[in-house]
Length: 320
Figure 1 (cartoon, rainbow, N blue to C red):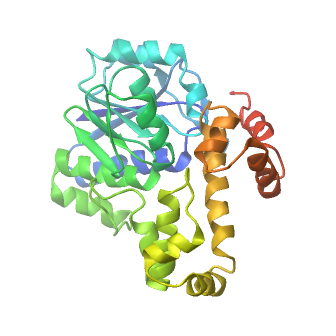
Figure 2: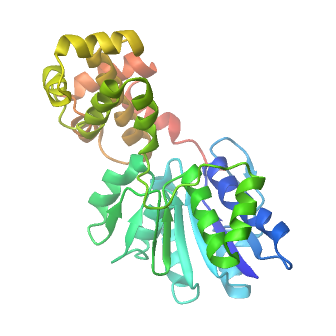
């Protein structure tokens, strides 16, 4: 029997945890003997609240787990406000497990926590797409991928909730065989399993591609040029149509202008940086393509009815 443990940090994603644990428990119904034992642990052994306010049923502290019943594989699950929850205590605890646990991994933003503990140095790894740029800048000794999940020797990293389900099916296939993996997939009515090498956001533009290939290509270009925005004219040229035609396409399908949609993508990028990193508001403005701090604040207030600083304080809620 494989023992898989999950170190759950505050404000974790319920969906990511469920996508990781449920397939393993389901696999036990298709094997002669239970294939998996799952443990949920926290740093201090106390209950942990998810971002949605649900409490994870914690069975032990990380040190108790390692001392009494070391798992075959330990995952770190971190999601919202992950940098604030990546405390010195967490880092010290993770460093102590390096010689004890055979494999370890990061789910969602858990890769950042592993990296801070020095457990991903020299490895290929991935993280949730919204954090990939910051992750790459913080850890030059890690080869950062945008794949759905990455397995490099004894390190396993995944980008988020549905990619965690892809990953678990892969691990079930590795541990129990193809027939069990298929049975679990059918039980969960999960018929869109994607290999780890699939890029995290690859399927998102494809949905728009079916409706409008031109708009899909335009949005992809915008997403790749957040920090240094391109002109609408240049975007149209790169697609191979006139600016007027591109504007007509956006007005018809998106009910907005090209510039307004581009601005929405940039302020959404700014909000992710405000909420999930400790970058200064000025640095956030630069990284999301705003010419000045005042410009970011104005657009931010229009979009979210608060300033970036107010939003950051609001999200830094007490951990219970």
